Amino acid sequence: MKLISSFLLFLFLSSCSDLFFYPDRHFYGSPSELGIPYQEFSVKDKGEPSLTGWFLPGEGNEELPTIFYLHGNAQNISAHLPNVAWLPAAGFPVVLVDPRGYGGSEGEAEIEGVHEDVRRTLRFLRERSEQFGDEYILVGQSLGATLALRIAAEKEFADLFQAIVVESPFASYRAIAREKVSDFWLLAPFQHLLVLGIRDDYSPERYIHQLPKVPLLFLIAEHDAIVPPSHTESLFRDAREPKWLWRFSGKGHLQIMKEEKHREKVRRFLRAVLQGHQSRGGKKL
Image (cartoon, rainbow, N blue to C red):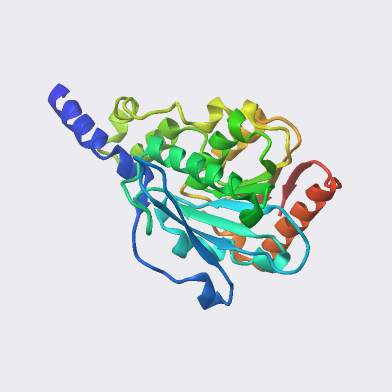
């Protein structure tokens, strides 16, 4: 039994990064193919992988905060573009960036490096406020939502975001890994042992109470089989006001923004919080 457990532990720890990151370099399509003007940019720092991103200007003359979007753990920005392609038409500029290992970005994805890439991109944007704007709304989905909550809690960026919207974040890297391991009958008896080597110091549950006091909207897909709703519920309970929790029945992982009626609700929410007129509370949609 000891030999088996040691072997399983070795196999699991050797693929820990694969558990969270599934990047690819396939090109799924550009904003121009959707009729959206865009600019490509690169984030370059000495000794760090070069990162590739897109900037989608907002339509109209209204100056609204820029959406800083962090995508999920698979594919790259060209695959996740439809999740935010509707925002420029509402007047919101959008920035998307691929962390290391994804799309056109150099390097290999791993937890510490990916978090640093988000910081690097925010510094890059802040230094170029005339091009990208000086106020942001932070939007993340799945792994991107988890990254968003961790980075937003850092003092360096405390004054940057006007609002935060997260869909299906997980509260703990170690906890979500344990849940995934338990799905496999061969590994389930060793689930607690197998996740001991996974870093949990970046988990948002440790920092959720340090988020800036800006409007914070959590989105839950009640049929999410990838990130159980309990993760989002836990983070919502521990977060400070002002906060909102919206539940979407009949929806699976990252399906909420695929429907126009849900996009419109988020658009109205963003407009309302920017004007200071959104009432608080949970909501089921």
